[in-house]
Length: 313
Image (tube, rainbow, N blue to C red; front, side, top):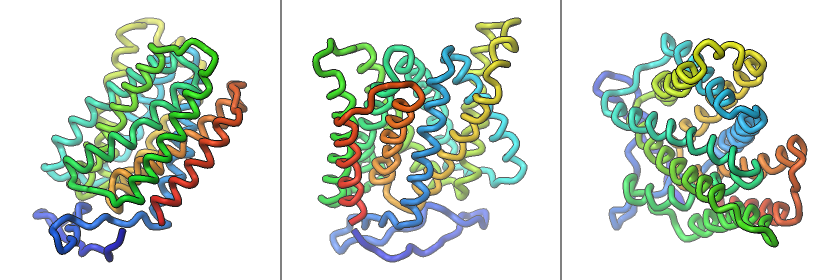
């Protein structure tokens, strides 16, 4: 992997573009953009905050309550940011609207995953299965073909993360509905990761993109909750208001960091780095939800570290 800093260019309206032209190999294929220490730090911070909001969503027993508060809180944060951020460039809006639709499907699938399975099962499978799909989609749609070491690092990380969850099922009847929901969640993660990676690069402003994304997607789940509960809405939400809004802040912060990172590096290694949140999630599952951590997850953590080393080396 290599290549120096790409030249900054400006969009027709004079704003600075985030989808900077990429230098190319002599054969014509774009060079991979390095994952710098700053980008790595941002993604790892996002991983911790992401695991935090997922744990909050899992802790709230009524999943619709949890996701209504987190999604609604994201809507409030997005609306509050709109006066202070740039409107995404016109060419970014198809990506943004498609991403909003995929995110809504993702929330629905994640709610189902958390209802059907343990946090320590659903979260690793959903997050750990996504980077391999991102690698394929990014190669097709973003023309980002990672080198062999990066592919090896991504594969090793994914194997460790999903393998740890499946290893925990040994000796038990597999919960296929829970596993299926988690895998479908992972597919939705991969799709919105690539869509948003392309969209934020076209937008001219990572913060503007995330603010508008939260404002657009954040309406649907709270609106459905109000429709379902009607006069009971306030009574259902009030006991978890503080916890849910904390989850919303963590969710928006985590995704803003990821979107910024996607303007600085290729999509596949960013996706794999982000899934280090699985180890944080497993630790939270063990400490907060009293779920077994076990040797398999220790091995998974080791594989993840080796995989990250290959991606960054």
